Image 1 (cartoon, rainbow over the protein chains, first blue to last red):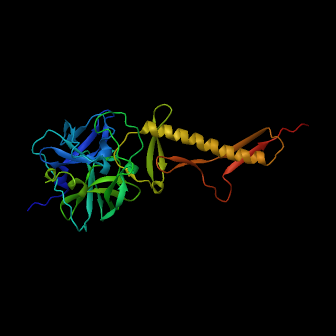
Image 2: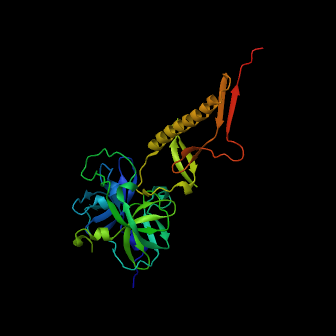
Image 3: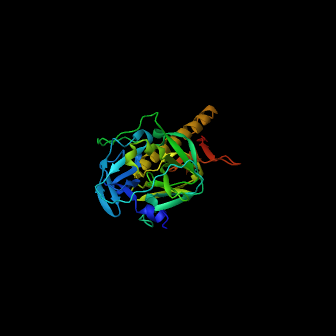
Length: 211
Length: 108
């Protein structure tokens, strides 16, 4: 019997790139085999184009406005690919598990070109976070439909994990090791803790999108 | 300790070490290459920190009603700390960390 783990998760990882600055913008992961992927809205809201790298291939992604929700920092993109490896998304009542966060922090790119994982012993449900307060203040100069900011009062439902993650990890999956599924999307961090957008926010999207 | 980068006058990268404990602001962890923005912010904050602190000390000298000194020289430490190296005046210990030299011209 095969167990879903970090090696399988790696096959679903997507790197969001800033083609203008030739840097990593953030992380994402495939949620449906026909090319739908998820990342954080703050990863794409300042980008002039949506360029992603999936399994070493570059794609220009489309922003799926009807499934995205900038108010809870969720962006759904689609690339033209068949048979992509989608992650198992779960929304367990009991979160007694250690977790791994997978992403593409720019600081680790040289040594870990296929992504870097960070472990945390605990994850627990936390208070809602004001979405806009975590964004870095910047003006958005591009004029594409996705170049928008969340409203000042918007919040997202979060979980807290007891580790720091580095810039570039945003949009990466938070994988429950014992439950063999993704329970959230990493969003923000400070000295010794990070916060996760609950998968509940994805399930608020049309249910057909998430298997 | 963590490192932040700024640009030197010749375009080279300068690394500033800062205290991670001071990094207590919740930030979205998308990656933004903002080295030019950080450099500009640091320059502005350094200028305002030095000018602000100098003004306070100079005003104190003036209020002491010292007999028209020819010059006043201030010496103090500026330390870079916090996220991305925010400048602040070095904390004093037993001795004051500011040195003020007041010079009078004496007519013989």
